[in-house]
Structures are given as structure tokens and as C-alpha cells.
Image (cartoon, rainbow, N blue to C red; front, side, top):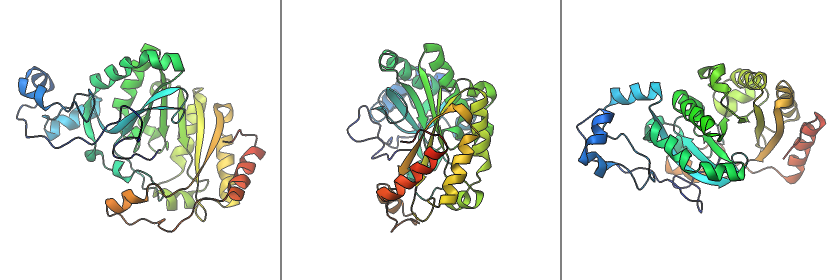
Length: 311
């Protein structure tokens, strides 16, 4: 997961800012909203750059639409190159995450309610708009977060539509909510950026507050379906850097077989610290330093010893 500044990556277009609070809208049915002149003036066309936002839906309607995937709660999106998968990509950062990683760069994505609800049809139209660019560059759409698997029906329906267009699909996830995906859903994933945050349960719980096994289980399911995997491992001195932990991560990755194309060793940094301060959340890695070149070399060497390509 990348650092998001002001709702998007600085310097990349188009980027999305957080939606502003709109005046109350009495009508609550999507088709009624679409036919209303008042709705047209209230749609968040600026901050969401063309996405229709169902701002008039009451809480029950929103929950129902979320369950079916008719809407999704989006933090932001951007267009980028070779960051979140191959080629030029539209990366959509979904709101909501069940984990609380100590090194999280985007704690402003933790709560789903802080995102902006977006219609499924609007998201699909946005993918279609960039279809030619994606096909020209070998790119596509990537869902990240937060944890995009927390909104499975929205993401999987967009992926299904993307596949029908011939657009490459990529899921950036911890795999923690893999149970939300059916085997049919997995078949619409071309590439998974799978975060293996630790190699043992104790360290994983300390790093994330969650459990490791769901990541392993989801990785195995991806492999069984022939989905390509890029492993991401965040190297934090004093937290995830022990030789034993790294060896355990390597052994986990071996279980995914030939699906693993490479492992990205991502050095910890402090670029996300200001967000923790802004949100007034106690930051557990306040004084932590990034890994030295020697430490990164040792960890890369451990993975290479298991036959992996390492970046």
C-alpha cells in the first residue's frame, strides 16, 4: 500500500481529493436521484472527477447497496506507472481495513465511513474510459486500500466488467479477508500483490493485530487458480527483520509455488508519520529507523537462497 497525500499521489493526474460535505438530500432511491435536477447539482464531479456519488441514500439503502456491490466506499484514486502492477494503471484506494499495521502509511483509510460512496456503474465507466491506454501499455486497474477485500462485491463486479473489456486486473491485499472471495471471484484476478507481513503468528499479531493463517490460505487459493503473485514484505528493523522471521516468510512463499514471480522487500520509512499525528492516533514507530543497506542485502539474500527473484 502506497502513501496517499491529500487523497492521491502528488503530481499524478487525475487525483481525487476527499469529498466535501453536501447539504441533506431527501430522496433516497438511486433512480430518483438520477432523474432529479437537484441531484445533478449535488453530484461530486470535482473531487471525484466524474464519479457519481449517491449522496442522497439513507443509511439502510447504503448498506444494502454495499452488500450487492452497487456502491463502494472509495478513499481516492490515481493514474500511475509501474507502481501497483505492470504498465499504466488506475489504482483505486478503497476505504476500510480490519488490520492496524504499526507501519501503516494511510491510517486515514481505516474506516469505511470516511470514504466517499461511488456508484458501480460510474467506476466501470471510468475503467472503460482508460481501456485503450491500459491495453497500449499493458496496464489495467488495481484495487488497493485500506483493504479492498472488505468490499468484495463492488471490487469483484468491477473486475468482472474489466475482464470483459480485456483489461488487466490486480488486487493489492493482505489476504486477511480471503474468505470473502469465491473461487469464481479469484479467477477474475490476473495479478495479486500479496502482503506477507510476517512469517510467524506472534510477530504478525504484533505488527497487524490480526492473524497470519488467512494470508497463507488465500495465497494457496491464488496459486491453485494460477493467479500470478508479487509478494510484498515490509522490512522494519527490530520488528520484522529477524533471520527466523524472514526464513518463515520465505517458507510461506514457497507454498505458493510458481505463482510467485518475485518478492519486493520494502524498506520501512517515516513518510506516513504525519498522518498518524494529524489523526491523533498514537504512533508506535515514532522513533524507528529504516533498514540499512546491509540489512536489506541480508534479507534479500535469504529470499534468493530459496530461489526467489527479489527487488
